[in-house]
Image (cartoon, rainbow, N blue to C red; front, side, top):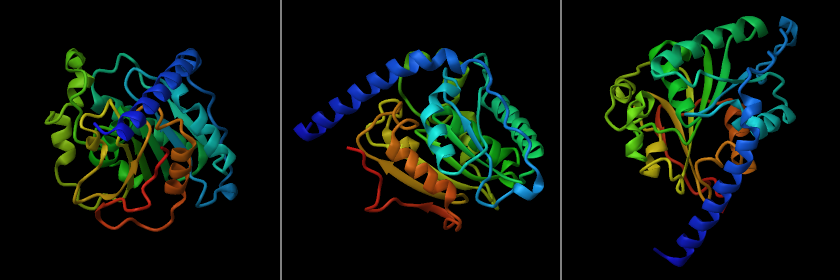
Length: 263
């Protein structure tokens, strides 16, 4: 491995350790469900201020989104809700159904017809299942995924004892469902993937490639899995993705020279 790559990997690993340490401190604060946003009168609804739903990854909770949530609210999103799903969840599809009920509750409470969703890791896969397989595309304008195993990850083979981990493996029944046809899916997908994500193996598995979906993949360079929902450069990219008004071209859009780099 080239010296530059080794140095970059060491920096990314050190950052991951620091983030993990901070997250362990915050973790207890995220166990309890957050206070719900108040209902908004219909006259206050603006097209660019859809509610944002944040969905965490495996064995995690809403505390992972403390910084991203703060970034979104500081830049004009007045309804940002971080959802927890049960740590006892054993089926991604059941979590997707629960997400659907929560989205309908948020829509009814706020008066918005659509929401945006940001999902980290497994959270992105749960949201994608809701959008693709449970009719969520009529309710979700944009789905942003951060380090989500769209094609399955082979990391930590000993973790296969957990049903959710098995569902995140390449070739699982759930991933085969998601790889199937999805004609007319209305949701815009923006997938952030990092070339130094040690949880996504291979790293490219976090790209979303599907001919029927409206997809924009964004490669992030220089950070690992835990940094994706925390790093300010990624947060800026998420805000840009959520604020984008125009449609993405049908099919996968490749990232170009403007790919996000935080190295």
